[in-house]
Image (tube, rainbow, N blue to C red; front, side):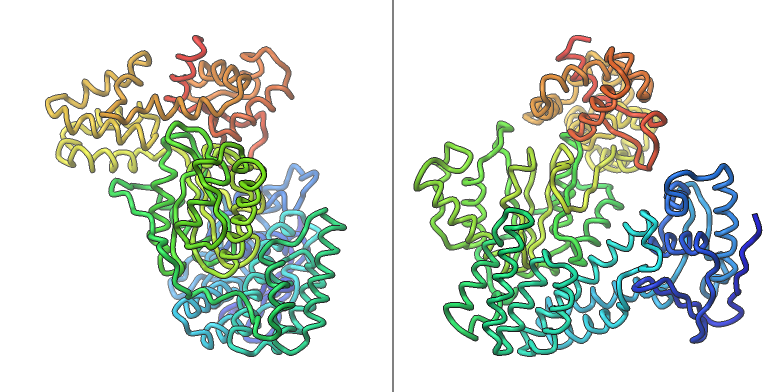
Length: 620
């Protein structure tokens, strides 16, 4: 193919914009970006700045249906053209676009890309709001919004991959607009936000937080009839399109406007004191997970997404990671951080009445709380108990609408356990831990915890047995953590046992763990048992999934299995095998590759200790 013509950047910095059509400017002059496919590659790289973008993602963005055989070579040409356009990175003269095992990475600074500048301003605005500087927050958020020139990448949205990235950018812009509008209302300047909110509600009619801000801005501008009409329109739209009523918080806002006139300004400021929402503690043995921890802090710290689900098998360290993140996010949630376990000690699910009652006690939510002791049914009993639970649920939604708090819902068994607990509006965020991936919850940000890398696992083991003992026999220490399958709980239990059995050589303990028939017996320290934790996860599986897991565990001993081998072991066809394997992936009992790959090319794995337990139970 012919190399597309590009204009190179002789001097100065190129400034790119994604918040509108894709554009590039050099010294104030717009640069030609070449043919459409080249622009698609550039847009995809810019959408993930300073992050490796897999070749498969670029290919799907340019050729979503039928990529040519020369796709990789064509991509190299487009990337080469992007390098010429961008010039070197900073003063170091390094290549802007580099290729590594993770794909192509584009190096770009905040001052060279509007989305990076947008994110920096939005974060600064939220920090200012958190410390009570509302005027500064409004100014910073408005400065961020001034970068928004229309629907992001609106000239390239016929590409599904680019459209997905553009949708994420637009959601970020909408969230910042809501933050800015609510801040202006709180400052007593509602009129400045009215027209913009009306336009956005017309484009996003089901976005409740936008509509609530519009209602408030109209109401505070003395236009009560219009504000009430906004709610009525929304109520009819929800009934017609979704068969639902507006959220309790939205209904409460409407009632307050009816009952108290202009004094019903808005939900109470996020700085109200909360009693006695003490923050969860942080585990001393927490080690590793730097990437996942950074991801949680970025997502919840920026406030652009409200719900994060951390999934992984029993013992993967989900709770420790969630508590560590909650500890580090203290300054972002001035109204507190609370943790509630969604299971009882025996592993069974708590009902909604119990959870709501505990949340009510922790956060000082007023309402007729259902008594946990009488909550025998999923909704807290019949008649009056159900009414009390419903009243507390409404009070909980109203509380979340008025506060900025972080709620950690720990060890969630299924989607139904938490659906009614998630905030429908307001600034509260929720961090969920679960063994399964809770695929029925949306929209959420998902983080699946892999096994610990060898280095992380060795660091955890060294904290428990001492660095000197670890250095004395590093080979045996490595065998121990690998026999634990990188499962944090198993590494921790190994360390606790070895800390007590100081006479036991690491090599001898490694030999014990290498024996499949004895490994689970060795992973017990006092009342902490890896077998017991894995058994709890086993009970979550349906009978059919347990049988499938038992069959697949035998295949996993060689380092993994393909879909063809799974179909052969299960004695079923390809489609049935895909469904069976994916059901176990959803439940957290089977792991799959992190990157995109076809079902046939993927190498699936059963974590070693989960496989050993499945052998015990199924007798295979």
